[in-house]
Amino acid sequence: MTGRLLPNLTNPLDRPAAVVPFPVARRGGRPAKLPEADLRAAVEEGLKDPEIAERFGCSRQYVYLQRKRHGLLRPKGPRRSKSRFAPKVATDRAVTMPPVDHPALTEDRTLYPATVTGVDGLLNVLVSGANHWKIGGEIRKGRWAGFPVYALTLEERATCPASCRHWRSCFGNHMHFAKRIRHGEALEDRLAHEVAILQSRHPRGFAVRLHVLGDFYSERYVALWASLIACFPALHVFGFTARIDGRRDPVARALVQLTLVHWDRFALRFSNAPIDECSTVTVEHPRQVPADAVLCPQQTGKTESCSTCALCWQSRRRIAFLQH
Image 1 (spheres, rainbow, N blue to C red):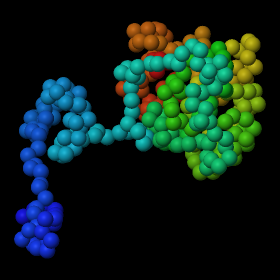
Image 2 (cartoon, rainbow, N blue to C red):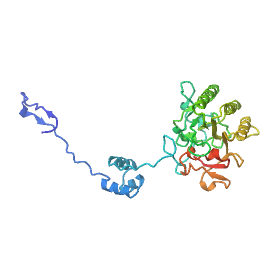
Image 3 (cartoon, one colour):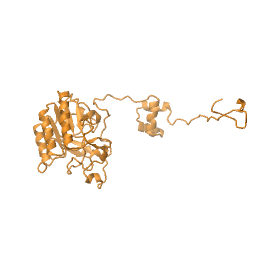
Image 4 (tube, rainbow, N blue to C red):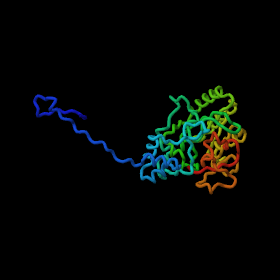
């Protein structure tokens, strides 16, 4: 006898003989959508989860769970980049933009103001590049090989010139959880402190990516990085800026001077600038890459991250990026 035992309420003595069993549902179950033998054959055939799901009329999540259940997980190849996350490519990602009248575009701010934080309470503002799938934690080739990588993220639009070509299409629109550091004197004081610590920790050299989001926002801020380059020989910087109007923008003039004098340690590229060196150009399709430019190898899956590429600071040649 199985199941719960319920007393027979018609028996005042509640004798054991009068106890009746609680009915137990029959466990027949539905037939499996994807038999193990068929799944195993499909995996050995080299089919990917979307293809298996389409063949057997089920979801990709169901296919993955069944592969996991039967021990059919595909082995992962070795990754050269010291990153916590698997690399991604730009060729299979859709590009979206907020509406033209979105408040973030007129108020010069991020779409996610709750992610903007001050330096108070933060252990550090320069975080390891291993926390970003595109950057990587340690440079693996080129003259900076072996350098650990750190990155700084500011608030997009709030620190950028309104002339930026990607004012509306900024890839920060997709970075819902990025921690954006509020710019100002407190940030600048903290940066000087942290770079000094990194100098003592990595006397052979380290690299800083400026900026994952945001841009150089004042002449004083540019002067800070110029002084850090002069004071700390282990510091190496690479990054991009939309400050390209050297005639009318004093911040752009200061950046051009710093880059020309210290390119070997301050490899800054000017985004969509009308120059053929130390610049970038944005395209919507690989067919649009100019003859004098090279398409970013990471975006097309030819290398895992900036750390395994080194093109941005190893060469002055113009680099094309797919809008993403």
